[in-house]
Image (cartoon, rainbow, N blue to C red):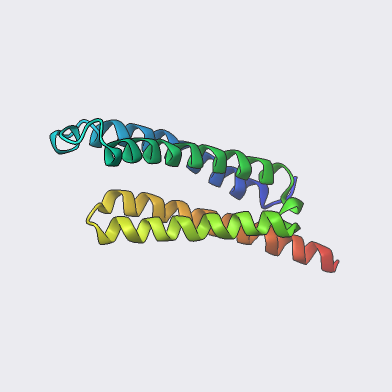
Length: 134
């Protein structure tokens, strides 16, 4: 197993935890009285489905990182690199949005997930490039 696999496994685990935490967080904010006043409306429906799609995104990302951890060479493929880059950009943008709107705890957690993902994927890609030179 490549040295980078542990970092990708850690990233996979962090996304699984994020998925669980994201789902729990959804249960908290959807129970707020302000949100309950719009129950049954289009914004309410979009908010609910969008939030839980986010939880599914984190779970899928966890599975992708686990797959990469088992074979880091797959990150040399341009499609996998694109997935990693888009995922990281989405995480940083989400973190910034949370901070800008005052939801700092989410901003920190998502930002830490983004940093771990960037480190793990970058480490795997660099390791593969070094190995290719040998």
